[in-house]
Image 1 (cartoon, rainbow, N blue to C red):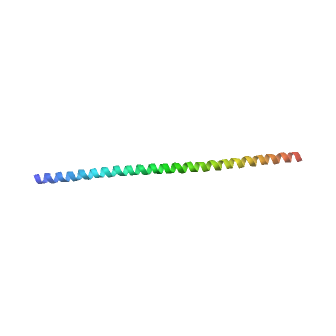
Image 2 (cartoon, rainbow, N blue to C red; image 1 turned 90 degrees about the vertical axis):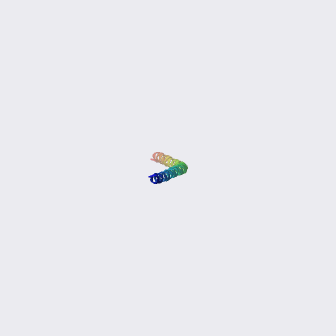
Image 3 (tube, rainbow, N blue to C red; image 1 turned 120 degrees about the horizontal axis):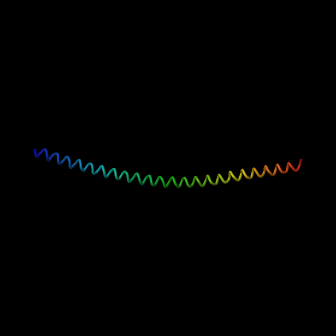
Length: 84
């Protein structure tokens, strides 16, 4: 009977150690994932800022071209109106 109890105690100790190792492994994995996500977020933030700058420049160019075209058409219409 004592032999069985001793065997069960040894198995319980091994199981407890295994569970502790699993807990530590899971904690380490979570920390690694958190670090990677933080790094990924920082990287994406930099890309979005860069994309926003590019879009801002292109938007300014598009508005400038539209205003210039409108002024040119208005000048042309004014010139035609004076001719006739």
